[in-house]
Length: 113
Image (cartoon, rainbow, N blue to C red; front, side, top):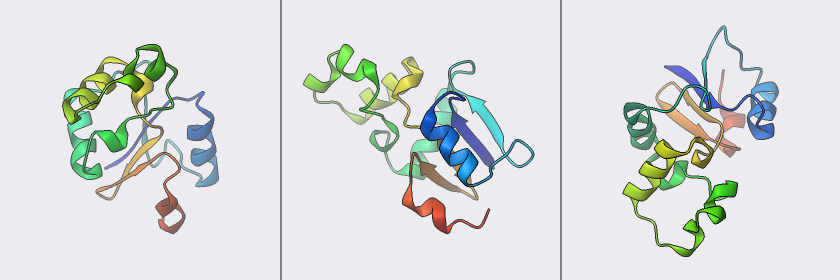
């Protein structure tokens, strides 16, 4: 599968897509604001990433706004919050050849697209 979970106005997402010349001919792009992440999708991402926490963005404005910075979060919390609020997903999430790349993953430079 070749899929990118992103926000088309997210500067990190845009920079990565441009830098590696990723396009809609080769990848399915899912705008996570207009097309919500499903339970099956987040579970697939977790299987590839190893945890929901790796997929979770503490940089999201709502992380502090919801007071989550003061709580001890479990894997189930991370999963629930990502499903509830799209901004909690670190972006972009790229699934390529059964590998997951999250945000500015250093391994991206080594991928033969």
